[in-house]
Image (cartoon, rainbow, N blue to C red):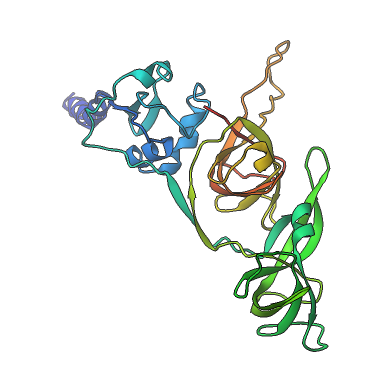
Amino acid sequence: MKTICKALIVMCVLLFPLAATAQTPEQIYTIKKGDTLWGVSKRFIKDPYYWPNLWANNPFITNPHFIYPGQKVAIRDGRLVLLPGQAEASVKQPVDDSMDSMPIEPVEEITVKGMAGSEGFITLDEIQSAGTLVDATDDRILLSYQDQIFVKIEDPNLQPGDIYTLVEVGEKIAHPVTKEVLGHRVNYLGEAEITAISPPVATAVIRQVTKEITRGALLIPKEPTSREIVLKKSAAPLTGYVVANSREKIALSQHDVIYLDLGFEDGLEPGNMVYLTRPRQTTHRTLPGHQVELPDELLGAAVILSTQPQTAAALILKSVTPIYTGDQVCTVDQ
């Protein structure tokens, strides 16, 4: 009997902290102007990428990046829960400053570094406007570092010192649904610097080489290797598809660059957040006689880096599962 009593006492002592934790009152934070789910997650959960789960668990939020001042967030046992039914009404309500001791530092911009890669994508319009390596100073087939080359570039603003990326055009990239050809995959060959201009050609020097360079290579303006992207909501609701990626990979994840079938003609801008989704299929055990459309599966999020008329490049900021060409993208106007 004494042994049993001692065991019960030990169990009570061990369970007491759990009971105390369960009874800990939740914290309520009121969203202030400029707050984002990204910032809220970083501040309270120590994980700025927690928001995909927050979005998935709160279906009444149409846009998982932008939230309204006055909206209340409950911090419960290491989880964030947005309290529904306050979005529109709370805009006119005074902001609760009772938690100024724990201010949120909203993430309004990010710095993208090291975007140069060995594979990429170029649209048909970019091919038409690209420059061409037409000749060099000797008869060698393969050109290399510090070789002087001659290029044709139809750019009225071309200046000595301009840096261009040398690429080789590869396979065609077709839309995963319509099968329309959108562009080509390109291989990154190196970089060249314009040294002199004498229309219709310009003289350049090869400054960097990663693969063999031959006549016929295309020249496109070099993308900055480091840039600041200011996050902003889109001007209109948009939906589209992932049509290609920057490397010859099948499964894509965080830090991969993807290309979308949306561009500035659709209203897309650099800094817009894009949400990656996939239609969820019913199982073989779905209840007979019930036709249901399941909610889409949330795959992750990306930020738009640059836009063309009908396409855009985006950087995957976070993925919760592998992403593939043909997956859907959307951004919702609040």
